[in-house]
Length: 202
Image (cartoon, rainbow, N blue to C red):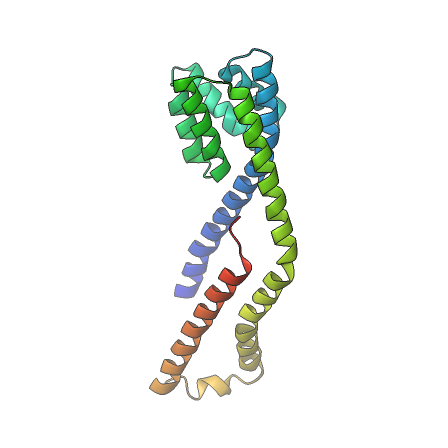
């Protein structure tokens, strides 16, 4: 019963975390295109609020919805810097933080925001291409790491399904419990090490 309750609580949380990560990844992939739209709008003489409104109208979700919320907040009286801070708080994407910093600095000191955003878009595109290359090169390593992480649990499950007495006969032995706990701990350490080996921060 306890395991079922744990799964009932844990699985939805894990699912929500994965959905959140996918949404952030889609947002990050759309950001260079949003910057292009904003640059064109700024070069046409529009203010930054109009450029953000154009993003909320022309692009697809999730970036359309998030910029739309920021524009709506500004429409109802929120300051540009506060609206951008709220946007960055909702969407924890590093490139978005760079965008908000660039806009805030230009808003306070002046300068050619269109050129700044154009340069930022170029840098973000280059970084995304590098991320894709790294993921392609490390794909085999990630697959191997997943297999190595699952194999011990899979073999243990197969043995239990074929001969349950193999484990049940010694389940109450303190030495078996200690060895099992040690094996699980070492497995977790191994998974953490493999994760660090095949995931790169670009």
